[in-house]
Image (tube, rainbow, N blue to C red; front, side, top):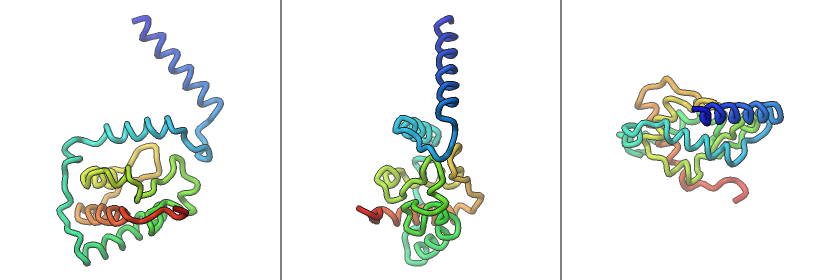
Amino acid sequence: MIVAVLFVLLAGGALLLFLKSEGLSARKKPSNFEYALANFALAQSIPASAKERKNPLKATGENLREAREHFHEHCAVCHGDDGHGKTAVAAGMSPEVPDLSADHIQKWTDGELFFIIKNGVRFTGMPGWNLSDDHLWKLVLAVRGFAHTKTPGE
């Protein structure tokens, strides 16, 4: 019991020192440790049943056209129409807006992408979207469309 109390006090003290020295400014980018911790927490927060969901929509010409339109309407302000996250809005965000063509994003299941788009990600700029499931699945198709695009400068 004493060890647990000491641990909580030490952790709280370390957090307080961190906040006093680093602050919570969005101009300071998170460390690799913070990114790893946040990505781990995100992965753990998605229910197993959501991870297993499959996109019921096929990548037809019409669905892909609508997917791009929906993406432009809802997502491009941060992620850019190319999905790389290099926009004026994204430049001021911390954590950074992810590049949707990145391997670690494309490795997420359709169900994980759906869950993230629908529910958002707390403590980031990613909002939850109150849209129909059909609309959300089309956004998943749009994200999948960035799988083979290159980040500018590659």
